[in-house]
Length: 239
Image (cartoon, rainbow, N blue to C red; front, top):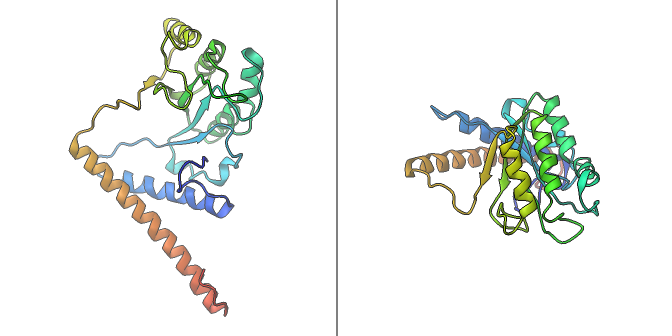
């Protein structure tokens, strides 16, 4: 639901539904590979373009996990820290409460593939916020969360888990690990990923190429059908 890429959801209901269909076709293509054991995480950005989730959801058959990227930041002013800030964050449109409710209604576990404290200029980031980390830990412990990952790349104003940079966040995170409730924990280092074998990379590229072709064929068929229908109705505009 972001706008960072040209192939984002678009701006109309028809485009949102086409995006969901493309997702489903990509899943079908990847699952068709012999020996494939993928799990597909359909993940949204928290509080970013309040598009109804059902309008671009591919369907339960194509989704294993429903995820949300949920940072300690917002596009609107929030309380400085503590319970009031957390309550405001989770209650935002497409916030943690809304996405968790949607996941539960569809019988899917939740994931939080990206989260962390942020120094983005106000009204966005909450800075080094140990209370946010504690609240996130409590939420994960009390809900069906498949996995979670702190975004530890030191990019886009997200604080790394470095005590010299974010002592309160690190202290809360360390206490969470020590208390035994730590679950599904991953610290993502996107700047230094583990290399994949060449054969595996080639297989992934072939799968993605096939999925892209399926989406292109589907779009061409849709447009051609519209062209034929318009010609039959006497209208000359191409699509």
